[in-house]
Each structure stands twice: as structure tokens, then as C-alpha cells.
Amino acid sequence: RGAHRSLRRWCSGWASRQPLRCGRGGGGAPPCLARVAQVVEDEVVQYVTPFIERHITATDWRRREAATLAFGSILEGPSPKALQPYMADALNLMIRLMRDASVQVKDTAAWTIGRVCEHHILAITAEQWQQMTRALQPGEPPEAEGVLLAGLKDEPRVAANVCSALHNLAEHCEETRNNPTNVLSNLFVDLARALLACTERPDAGERNLRVSAYEALNTTLTNAAEDTKAHIAQLLPVIAGRLEQSFAMQIVSNDDREAQNELQGLLCGTLQVVTQKLGQLDREMADRLMQLFLQVFGSKNSTVQEEALMAVGAVANAVESEFEKYMPHFRPFLCLGLNNYEEHQVCAVAVGVVGDICRALEVKVLPYCEEILQLLLRNLQNPALNRNVKPPILSCFGDIALAVGGNFEAYLQVTMSMLEQAGMTAMDVSNPDLVDYLGQLREGIFEAYTGVLQGLRADNKGPKFTPYLQGAMRLLHQVAESCGHDHVSDDLCRAAVGVVGDLAMTVGPEFTRIAKQEPHKSYLKVLLKEARQSPNEMTQQVGSWATRTVSQ
Image (cartoon, rainbow, N blue to C red):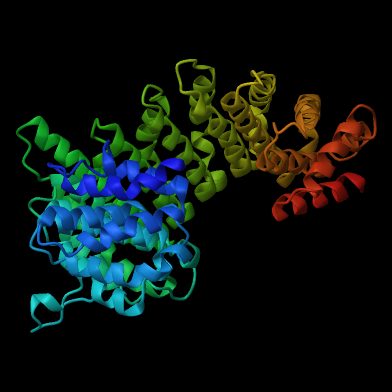
């Protein structure tokens, strides 16, 4: 902290050195100043602002950029109150610098506006938003366009930073995306149109611009309010059309293939976002999308396959039981994904899609259960599979059991044996990473138990679980013993007491009899009390419900 008193002298030296630019994300002065700001916080403002004020309007572009970069670097750390006296004037200058003659200055100004959107968005006035995002009207001169929309047509380095700024703007709307309207609503059409145009620039392959533009578009789509859904629906055929066109790209080199893979992955990602946002699809559009995704699976690129799998999961959620007609065609690709333990991200996404399909098809997923369960069991036993995929696999057994209900009886013995074996996993509790993993593993086991219990109960087959009761109780005992030692997360506690309640409701008198005996009575009391006293309201509710259920 004591070094902050040297900041004035350091900044002056920084501005006078050639070459000045050291980069914003690597080594050198800018990231160093950003770290100083995070440590020193409010005090950094008084030492850096004189440097900014002295050089922000200098005739030398290097000094203008240095001042701009300094301002952007101190935005994370100081409080809004400390920056408030400077923010309005500084942002007005950033808006003006977006039209600077120097590309380097414009680039850094766009980056700085993005930092303001990320850390101090409430400081931006309505007038400044207008100056940044106003769409150009017919007959108006180019200067009338908002500087961010204009920046999307600028050099790729500038446009990429504008995309980041728009992404940060949309990120702040996450909590209002289910509202009738939010701050994105009036901007939505112009932002979406500008970002779509940006993705098709001839130079969009430079500076990661195409990826940045699609990411900004996806965040805007995700966090837009309900009143934009009609506009979002209009985007669906546009993006689908682009994906269709991508198969006609001329491929004569590896670079061409990589460009096609990147584009198809981005388009699948946007189609997933749009489908999730709309929540439903008409039959014709669902058919069109599934045909496209099945074509995409021909790619050997893991990123493209991940995006296509997630997009198929979104379609399943949207069309629900009608997804049944796609299963014969999709099944081979789903199984390939589940088999792909070497590229564990693909395998993890495929596991998630199994859950989506189970929720969509419910009992109609039964013809595919045996093959899927065999693949999941094989993955659990495979030491070469990344361990982080295994908790979701365990949870997936619960999704399948819940979907097929009493029909899961056929798979009960092998599944319960696997869950009991997984429950005996032990880890070094002095290693925080292993403790976290063990918690996730146990949470996945409890989620599997929950799905099995609720599925059996739905078809009046609760007593079929009785032979496996001791295995579930043993894991509950282990978790209860860890309560109070920071080894039990709130999510794990909630999952555990949820199983307690489900055991009481599904197994009935047999569970109640065991629960009244020691040592079960004591550790169940500890577990239920832990849940009821949780700071999380949802965990409290589950704990209270489980307590009442056990007492009945």
C-alpha cells in the first residue's frame, strides 16, 4: 500500500516513455496500475486523476491514450463515491475520444467505456446512453450515430472492445430479464441489428471480432425483457439461414475448415439462446433446426459438437414430448457424446442433454434407457474420465428414474450398487479442492436417490427401495458427521435432507422405524437441524418439510 505515494511520479514517467503501449491484459504498466487500484482503492484516485487531466486532451495521441488507459485501469477498486466527481466529465471525454483520429485512442476509449459499463454502469446518464447507442436515422449524417454503434463499423480492434462494452451493458440486466420491460428494450432492435451486421464483416476474423460480436448478441438476447420476444422470434429464421449457408462454404484448407467450425459453433450457440428465450417452437422450425444440428454433428470439432448438443437440449425443452420423433436420428450422436471421455467437456454436455431429454419425454425415453444407463455406468468406472463429469452423471440417474417412474425397477439393483459404492468414496479433507469435489459427488448421489425415490413413489413401488435403505442411511450418517466442519455446503445439506423427506414418504413405516433407533435418530436430528438453521430460505423450507414428514 505504501507504494501508492509514488503513483504521480510513476504515471509521468509512464507517459513519457516510448513505446508507451504495453497492453491491457499482459505485463506492463496498465495491468500493474489496475492491481494497485484494487489494493489502494479510493486513495488511488487522487494520485492518478492529475495525470489524466493533464494528458487527456494532449496533442500527442500517445499521451491521450495513456490518460485514457489510466482512467480505465482505476475503475475497479475505488468506490462510486470516490469516482463520482470525475465520472460524468470523464465519460463525456471517452465518448468524444471514440471519434479520435487515432485508432489506438479509439480502441482504448472503447475498452474504457466497457470498464465503466462493467463497474460503474449507474454513473452513466440518460444523455450519455443516447450519445452512445442512438441509431442513425435516414438522411442523418454519420456523426449523429451513437459512438458505440458507429464503433462496431470501425477497425476490428475498436469494434471488438465495443462488443465487450455492449456485453457488459447486457450483463447488468440479468436480474430484470423476466420483467415485462428493462433498459435493453428500447435499444434491442438497433443493438441486435448492429451486432448481426458486425458478425458478417469481411474482417470479422481479425481480433476475435466475430466471436466477441456473437457473445455480445447472445448476452443481449438472454437478458432482454419479455417485450422483446416478438423481435427475438424474427431472429430465429435469420440465424438458421446462416447455419444452412455455412455448409456451402468453400473448404480448400485447414484454415477454411477451422473458420467453418468456428462459425457453426457460434451459430449453434445463438440458436440455443434464442430457443431457450422463446421457450417454445412450432413444428416446422423444430424440424428445420434438428435437421441442421444433425448435419453439424458431422464435424469432428469438439467445440462445435458441444454447441450443437446444447442446442438440441434447448429444442427438447421447447417441444417436450414431440421430441420423441427426433430420438431415432439423434440417439447415435448422443451416444457418441457420452462415449467421448477423452474430450470430457463434450461428455459433460451430453450428460446434461440426457437430463433435458428425460424431462421432455418422461416415460417415452424408456426405449433408450438401457443403452444410456450402460454408457453412464461405464463412464463412472472409467478412471480416464475427468472426475468433474462424475457428479453430474450420478445426478443424471435421478433424471432417468424420475422420467420412467416405476419402470426403473429393472435397473434398480445395478444403480443402487453403484450409488452405494460411490458413497464410500473418501478424500483428503485437508485439501480444499478434494473436499469440494467430495461434496459435489455426494450431492449428485443424493439427487440420484431423490429421482429414484420419487419415480418409484409415483407408481406405488416405494417398497422396492427397502433393500437399499441402509446404503442411503450410511451416506446420510457420513454427511451429518461432517456438519459444522465446513465440509458440508448448503446445497449438499439441502440435497441430503430432501432425501430424508423422500425416504419417509416413499419407504414409509420401515424408514420411520429405523429413523427412531440409534444411531440414526441422533444423526438425522443433527442433519435436519442444520437445514432448518440454514441462512438459505430454500434449505430452511426443505428442512422444515423433511422434519414434518419424518415426524408423521
